[in-house]
Image 1 (cartoon, one colour):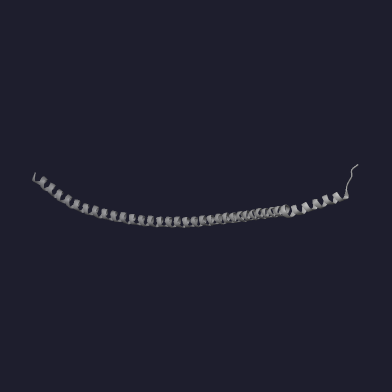
Image 2 (image 1 turned 90 degrees about the vertical axis):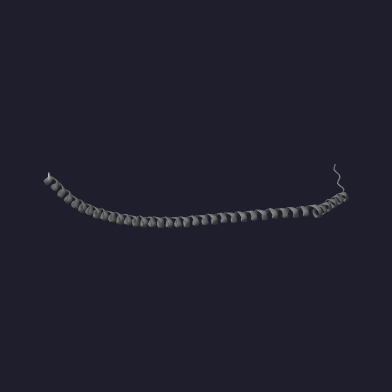
Length: 140
């Protein structure tokens, strides 16, 4: 049968616990410490990455809002400029029409005056020619 010596059993048990203690001090605690530091570093990096991602999202949202605001301001400026241009165009067109109408009226008046003058000249010439024709007819 199996013979267990109590003395050797105690020696092996003391040896086992001694090795566990020595390995705990030399190996296990430093490894656990390194694992803990690594876990803290990874956690810190993940937290920093989440924070950076949040900041990025906030920055993108802020940038999109600024772009939308700039577009709306640009649209307002464009509409204002367009309306001012249309108003100026209407003003210039009405001024041009008024000038053209005035020039046309002046030209009509000048033409009427010249027609009247030409009629008077022709009337005088007709009278002269008729007198001359009468004289030539009477002489003949």
